[in-house]
View (cartoon, helix red, strand yellow):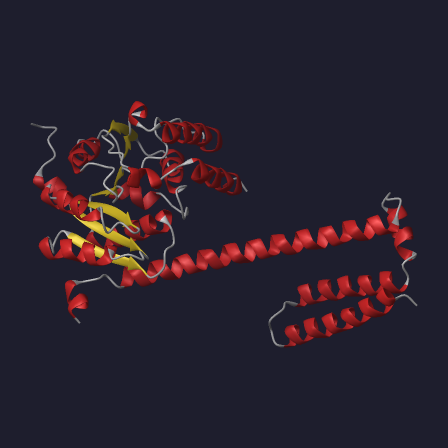
Length: 234
Length: 115
């Protein structure tokens, strides 16, 4: 099929995974991505548990597909993702994906997320979580963040806080990410919009567990993001 | 002479000398040394001649001299907090850059773990 993502496309795709204290969850995530034939750049964000050991265990199984970098202290998901985006350039990728390492995203969605890039429909993609599947508190926070992204960054998207996103190498070179925390999601969308990069939304599956809900954009994080958005206006 | 008329000028002199030493050691800029010296001179003047604050207060439309001093202190504190905020923000950014660069230049290999 013409729209099929080929093994060569997958080989030219690098998945960036920031990881902070994910020792109990990250291994199935890494191995499912490796099984699909994708390469990975994993950034250990100064974890205080044995996340790094677990990552290296997976690297032993897939030594050529897994590349590991480690921040010596915890600096937040934004800095870890920035590190991944910078480090991935060493491997000369054609497509770069970033996704969460806590198991809330499914590796089965990778093909769907990069397909618009492969067929040339778009240069950037965000994976959109169905709002009806979200727990109420998350749904509420997410709606507020979508609204704030529209107000402050003038971009209307269905899911501004998704951590599942894909971009071509050329488009990645055009954007600048400065956010250190969860603001990165909105900032990515703003950069795509401001640099006139063609973009698409792709529905993705989201697996919510008590652990995955403990992280991500909750109401407290939403307030912090709002403060940062106001600060970025100046 | 009231007690504060004695204490504040002494504190001011110590503060000014301390800022001058910091400037000579390259820890303060000339501008911030001058600004802080001016601040402590003003504190000394008001503590030695408190009635002067009434004249300054009337000058800016405030009725009581004490209110004028309180507002002045708030402005100085606000400026100090704002400066500290920008300094911390810059330090955070510098730290992020260093931490990122160190990580990127040191990809972790399986050999590293075995060593």
